[in-house]
Length: 275
Image (cartoon, rainbow, N blue to C red; front, side):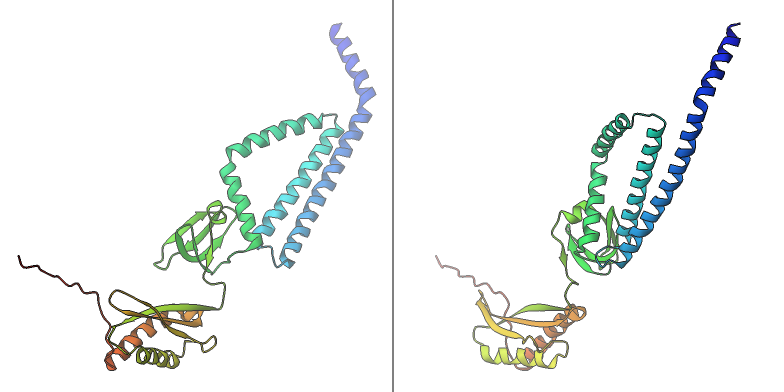
């Protein structure tokens, strides 16, 4: 008898509520379909905008596109849950608390992501640039949301967390097309300074990789313990920077030898008192 009564009550309940349940269910399905369609459209829109922008890297465009799609999907799910009578505000509060806990646990990772976004947006350097950062130097091979990868001149790969890169001073040696080199040549105190400077100027004029504009500078920089120091500054194309310095140093030394210009070396005089 009790089973019959329960069956009858269930029948009455379904009769009274089934139409509303079916309506809510169909509405939820419709909302999900529309929501996922909108999420896909938003993702495509963000990707398209990122490709057209000169400031957004491809990696950053993919990140923002995926993030925007996820946000739309979450909103859609919350609307569906509201349709079935769930208390969304309480659920949001729970998710918020969980998000804070996860954020505290992953603050280092989130810091790397935030730094990666800043690097990809402001672009203090790009792939292929030669940089100095965090006591390392090398050619940038990859910039991701978490790390920056560089290869050193001796072909060693270094992976640096992005928060270390963004939080440090970055020296980009590839930013400009030209660079200024500076060399110091010491001559003896008994040598003719004007003669030595003329020899150096001739070497600079004959070296094709030394730019004529801006004009090279050759001047007496100071008086050292055992030498008169002549400072040389010249400009060259960035790819020729190191090779030009080496060539100028060698050619000046050879020219000094031909012209008998003395290049001194440190000496020490010992005085012995006779007792």
